Image 1 (cartoon, chains in turn blue, orange):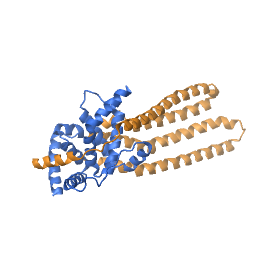
Image 2 (cartoon, each protein chain N blue to C red; image 1 turned 180 degrees about the vertical axis):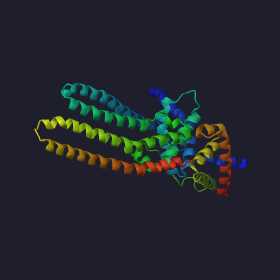
Image 3 (tube, rainbow over the protein chains, first blue to last red; image 1 turned 30 degrees about the vertical axis):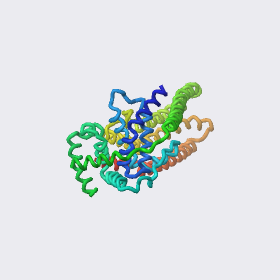
Image 4 (tube, rainbow over the protein chains, first blue to last red; image 1 turned 90 degrees about the vertical axis):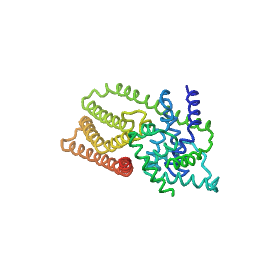
Length: 165
Length: 192
């Protein structure tokens, strides 16, 4: 049973780690906080993995956990730090200087930083859109209607375009 | 505009998570899980043990006053425990899997429940506690052969001390809640 869980977790981690991390980075806007959130999400995925129904969509499930954790974490940074003291897990931190010299990296950083200035729900919506989620999937994850998602996406595109100019 | 989205997608997807030792991570997660499991088992053992202890104590508490006192305090404790459980777990078990909108609503409900424990249920518990202890003391004081006036003084001092202690504890908790929970509720309510 435990072996199964470990095997499944490894698979989930392998398939979704980059998507989870990108959503965390887009939400937090900096690598240190994104790493903290990434860690918190992995813990929640592990804790809830037993309850995951295999017939459900794992991608939607993971994104829900990620976005809900992000919403709560944003206002609980101090609490998260306390929690880290209890959890003896240390994720490797990013070297900010690595690859930072080229223009492409600067563009990437600018995109993530700009996304993190949007409203919380808008950050989630654009993050999910950039992860190739359909409007229906975004609606399922956020709890908004599909038409509302469409309206918001148009608004976010305009706002992001303006900010990135 | 779609070209823009496509460009953003390309940039967005270039960011990758740093490689990490997944086996070490699983080992740490297992340790945390085992610790949590041990705590839950301890709690599961503690509850029936308390009930067994109470069953053994009941013959000793054949006195109606003692029995009423213990029952009142016990009921008060159960009331608080139920409220704490409700505020922590709510009605939905896997709340992290809810849609963002439902998750926020559920979280606000749980936070408000936590506030209610301090503002309402702790006061109810204080009342029940003071009443229960005073009832228990009726029998204890009978053994000392004190006058009615002396007994009244003892009951009053006891009640006042307990009230002051509970008042200070509740005020302290209320202050902490206002600093921690109110801004969080405000933040969550303004998410749209």
